[in-house]
Length: 296
Length: 264
Ligand SMILES: Nc1ncnc2c1ncn2[C@@H]1O[C@H](COP(=O)(O)OP(=O)(O)OP(=O)(O)O)[C@@H](O)[C@H]1O
Ligand SMILES: [Mg+2]
Image 1 (cartoon, chains in turn red, purple):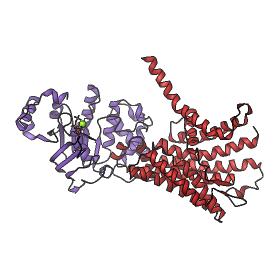
Image 2 (tube, rainbow over the protein chains, first blue to last red; image 1 turned 180 degrees about the vertical axis):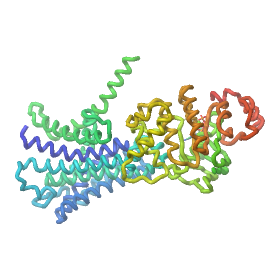
Image 3 (cartoon, chains in turn brown, green; image 1 turned 90 degrees about the vertical axis):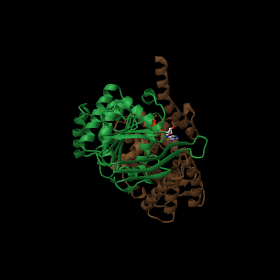
């Protein structure tokens, strides 16, 4: 594999690391199966690209993309907490609605960022191989988010959020406003996914309304993969595992796509990811069943 | 002081499965009183405790805590006034979190939560002191996940957690029922000591009539969503299990066997 392909995979792995953080908050911390992600990823891209094209400062545009992602999360969680719609269904409703909204925001199916200033532009003339620039900047982004997220999860509110996910009755008995924390958590999760979408659009130079398809499955693959390889003993390690899972996952995919003898094409990715996630979910259970069978 | 006035809770109202779990229950508990509650399965004991905690909202009637009407308050808002230990050791703690995280969560009951660190050195010292008195060696295991502890250890920690902050009433719903006899005795002893020391107002549900008479200062029996009898002071002293059964049939005009209470 060429250096360009390798670092391209690292770059996308870092971006999906942000998605993995979001998926981690929803699925692991809150136990809230949230598919909004497939809509909030292109939402972040659409908001950032549209604002940048109209001349906004790319940093502000990226921040707005995050806010938009948060709002999408608020809608999903609100449908669940206030209107008592099943969490999975609530997230599907938001995801579907976002498809229309994203088209409205962009006014067309895609927006190209040709020669517009992005958050990566100031570093373009850096005196290192061009394929290293984006991975380095994204590493910076991801590490900042990582530290903030760990700090948040170990705070009083973060602890209350974790309790809400694992034992909401106990959390309420200890004075935790579980509904409010669910809304906050799903909002933060989708804000991070919106940020990933915004950075993805800027690194690829385009935002497309269909770019969200499968985001959730890749995010899940990252989380489950990371958990399988690394320790999840503390919350910091667990979150770090999600990031590593995302990078390794993209690298593995790049390797597979590069090996001609496998005969994989890019369009097979979603199928492969879905199969891998299914296996990752089922395998530990199979082991358990076997062990039980052996005892009986 | 806890005042409950004509409390009614109906599950599945206006359906074929309508179940009037509480039927106009009234009760006043003065501050510092330790009340034990007995009653057969389905009598409404857990529902009564859930109604006090806010987990179940009353369809009718009033609940006042220190003259404040909390009838419509949700659980989390009442948490500053009501602390509880659940029957199921898994229910009262988070097994995925560590001992210190569980305690840190309980430490903020009734207080606002912010972005400052949930675990601090001074908290850890406090937790260690509290845990040390259990004599279970848990003070050296602050960072262990709760899921690693036995049921009895978890109930003991739950009890400590419930009493980290002041409360107006402590609710204990058969909190020793899931434990083996020896551990149950240990947790009950701990309960008695803590309630006495901190002079807590407490309501403890138990399935054992003997235990209901042995601990606390007042005993209630619930039956079909209401109070069948309520004894305290001199009337209660010297009572034995057969006396309770007699008391029940006298007030209710029904026979109740020892077994139906003890074994359900
Ligand atoms: N959430 C609920 N939905 C419907 N019915 C309920 C619910 N909770 C309790 N009940 C019913 O209300 C009645 C009172 O139940 P409760 O749990 O209060 O009894 P209990 O006195 O605690 O009994 P036990 O000794 O078995 O714990 C029962 O008939 C029960 O089936
Ligand atoms: Mg009960």
